[in-house]
Length: 263
Ligand code: T3D
Image: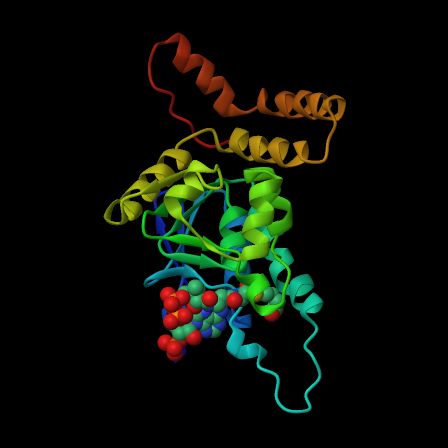
């Protein structure tokens, strides 16, 4: 029997997804894309999933595309990499961004190529201090994909984005946090627990509002102030009708912690 390339387990409202091709540093093949897509679609359809935690098995988070699938034999024509982006990587990034639940990424080791940018597509990225981020594309004659050219300049500014993308140097987790590429670097032995604590906290929060916050922040990249104000108005109207908002206000007035049900 072939082993699952993505392991899924539930811990309360948290769905933990672990990329599981450790011998190849969890690099992406078609099977891993398919299994990850199915897991994210199932999460989207299941309202009892209130946060997702994405991580990797073994010593790496993800080394991007499995390059052993890209070796070109004598006389073979070039692969159509636009097609793999269209079919596999772009839908993955869209799934992560569109999921109306928070996605925490625990980068347990090196995150290279598309692996780095898939991490950046998540909502909150924690990394082990020994982990690193590498825009490895330029080293093999490719262009950062999976949203890299979108996320990098927005997160770290144009100067650093260009350095990272054009040089393909390894950026250690602590510097990644200093630069604002990720939320936090934590001691290696603390990563799993901290990431789970964070995901568990998020899963206990007003889920619908958190989903709307994701939508608003994503839209702000393309909106002017007027459009963004209109969107905030619409989302706030929706948030104001949720059970969690009612509970939040009630708990505040009663001076007790809120018990959000996620609806
Ligand atoms: O193709 C398309 O569809 C377009 C989309 C492209 C998206 C992309 O992600 S392109 C970028 C692809 N990724 C890379 O270029 C990164 C390649 N890997 C590395 O540069 C290094 O492995 C790392 C910096 C990530 C880690 O280095 P290190 O020294 O810690 O480990 P290693 O010894 O290089 O790798 C360990 C094993 O994993 C090794 O196999 P072996 O020798 O033990 O049998 C290595 O070949 C394998 N491995 C690592 N990365 C990949 C890989 N095998 C296949 N594909 C990989 N990406």
